[in-house]
Length: 255
Image (cartoon, rainbow, N blue to C red; front, top):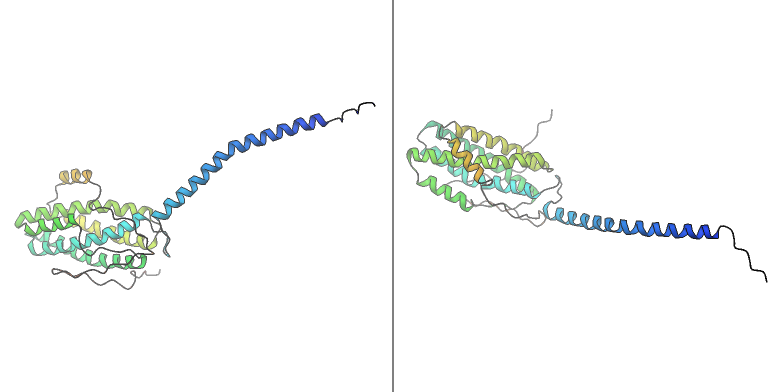
């Protein structure tokens, strides 16, 4: 029996198939690490984001946003009584005026801050932190021009530190309530900085060194999930009282 002649083209197709199969395997080998890395990277970023930023009806709420709301509250808890001391103990009208600005500014800002905290479910402290209590003790024991100098230097340093935080949050926050609060805090802090400098007691060289030595006046509080947060009502003080929380954010006038 004569052998069957080979089918033309079979060798070509067979060789082409091997080449295609080889290319496909190589491509898969190259792409698999990329896909795997992309999946891991995406998962990690999502997990990290979920622990730092939460969704609210007013926009994403970041850990830095919550930090600002907490620090605005802490500022009022010690700067308001410090201002009251300046009104009583200041030896010059400029120092007494600075004290009045602190009292008026933080009375209004604290009400705004507590309203925002309630709407966002952020728990607030009801007493100053340890460093702020030490500042109040220092001011309470100082008298005469020694009080004027210590009051001005301590308050100016604290305002300089928080001023940079407010600006940073205002520049990047995606939350409308926090943005409005940052605007209010920015105006209040800037007013206090100017009125403190008007006393003539600010040592700008020492201030620059102190600001460079530390970037934050108080420890950053841990992140809190607004879904489980319970706002803390302020406790009454023997020396001063904070105003009750407002029922809503300050009204916006329509053009």
